[in-house]
Length: 590
Image 1 (tube, one colour):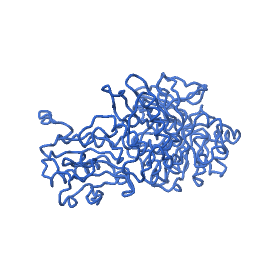
Image 2 (cartoon, rainbow, N blue to C red):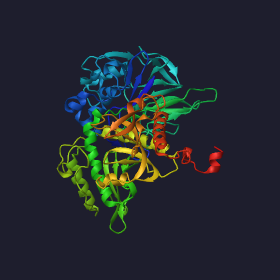
Image 3 (cartoon, helix red, strand yellow):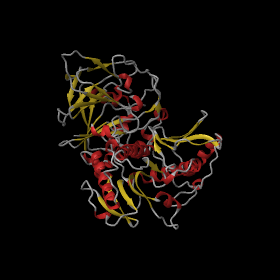
Image 4 (cartoon, rainbow, N blue to C red):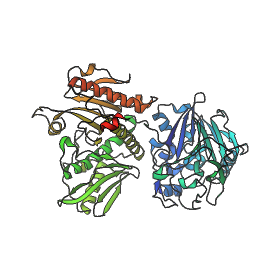
């Protein structure tokens, strides 16, 4: 079975009761691909009806309290399709309970069987409509499958039952009452361990362990885990699971076991985590068609900030001063300015909180939300913010090499900032950075940093052969500086009109004769023609389907590099530094 972790409802940040920084709340869900039972969805999140007409399908006070993002791309039905599946193949939906942000997606899967505790369904039918239960979510008369709350004992929890129609060795329904009248967890076998989705019985990491604090009864709860991670690994033989009924709702605890009771590893995930789930998929789906509008909007945001970086930083060879670098929350320009000419400052895109942050090195800081802004609004607000901090950069405020040349200050057409999709873009970008950095380690010659170019919206690392190239005076200044030396460059793009798919790539410039006839690996890699030259390409969707995606990409990048090295006469063996090691004594003994 394959398990995907999804975020089906982003909400406002919640304060942590144990003193950690606040984190965005989400509805964490699972999509399980099974061999014989179709797709199984654990939680349904908010649905298309909720997004289209929240005034009808959501309770006003609840909406004002949690401030849901309400993005169609965040709904389960859209995410199932984005993963390459037919939503009609979702045969089972297993709910931890029927709260609004867990049941809203049910109408989008009208033919699925919906598994729920008997007590929970009884309470929902008796109480709704209210803040918790919205009858419109089950007005289509779902195919309910209910459970009485009695059963066998499993890891210290009573009343556990297999799920009807699903293999009992792979799925269990685990009563975890307290948050609602019939709240339950869902255990899914994940290889040699169990993954327990605890729903709203587990909000934050501190709720696990003998000393767990009970969250406040009427206050907000925090996203779990250090740095917002929503999964806690419970060591084998160390714990059993126990339920308590605190004043404010369900609480899942872990308690020590004696040495005579050895249990399998259990990974516990709960309601909240940042972005799209507690255990992030390495390379989530990112079809260009799904986020074209969001990409075009954010690309222009990035160019505005990038041009400020260009105007405020010291020039470096091959434009190395210009690109963005990723951070643990988004992208950064790195420090710029200073030296008495203007304040030393830094501009960051926080793509977890979805805010633009300007920090000045005297301690001042200012920020504003990215959500709901057009390019014009972003441009004006950013320059107002900078001026308020005494920073007044001058830029050429029109797009570079994009489909239009509308001045940023006048562009109200591009106004689709989608926080879910932009966060996903950043998470993919961050994984690619680490992958390219691992590849870069094996070359001891002159190498660029791994950096994100805001003008082309790709990310690259470049190896230099050491040979200077005679460039044409008729070439544009960007090209003359970038390709003044012979290079073998590798990277990743998200797709554009010419090549409407995300892919890893490599090229050699100037291109040596016969490059396109050199072998590439793995078998899915190919040479394509692009603007009169040839690119080695390995499509992202092919990588996602591979058993070892990281190994496949590294094999591809090395094969393309070796092709360029052979034809340019580069001594790749002399410049090799496997694992980043050039120490001859260490290399001899490793």
